[in-house]
Length: 152
Image 1 (cartoon, helix red, strand yellow):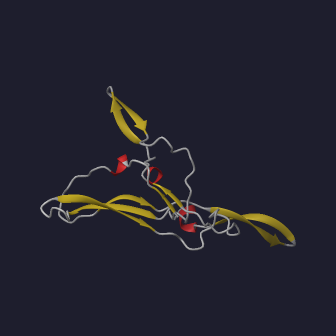
Image 2 (tube, helix red, strand yellow):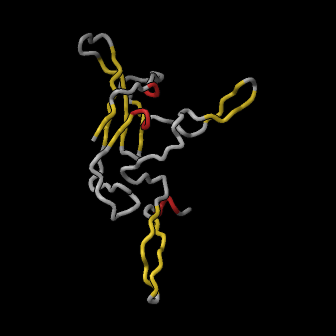
Image 3 (spheres, helix red, strand yellow):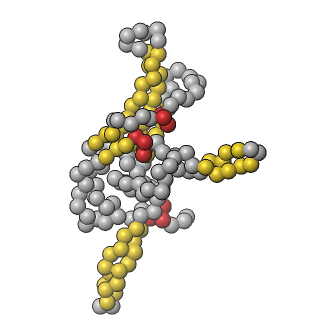
C-alpha cells in the first residue's frame, strides 16, 4: 500500500486539552479503514515537556475487490491513502457572513467519488445478478449492505 507523505495536514491541527492521557480521534474513515488519533506524551529528549503524538492505524482488508460492488472483479493489490482525502469534511456547515447564514463545505474535492476498500456500513451498496424465473433470466438488483439500504 502507499501512504502519501508529501502533503501538509491542516485539518489535523490542534484541539482543546481537557484531561491527561486522553487520546483524540481526528479521522475515522470507515470507507478506507483508517483511524488517525493523537495525544500528548512526555518528550523523550525533555521529560518535563510534552509533545503531540499522532498515530495512523490502517487496516488492509483481505480479498478486497477493485469494485467492491462486483464480487467477480479482480482482487485489489494497490491501496493508496492520501491524508488530504481522509481528512476532508464534506458535510455542509452553517456560517454567518454579514448577518446572513450560508451553507459551506470545508473541503473543495467533495464532488469526486470516494474509493472504498471495504463496505462503509453507513452507505447502501447494491449489485445486479442474473436470476432465472419460470425459464426466463432477469437481472435483479440485490442489496450488499441490507441494514443501510432498507429503513427499519
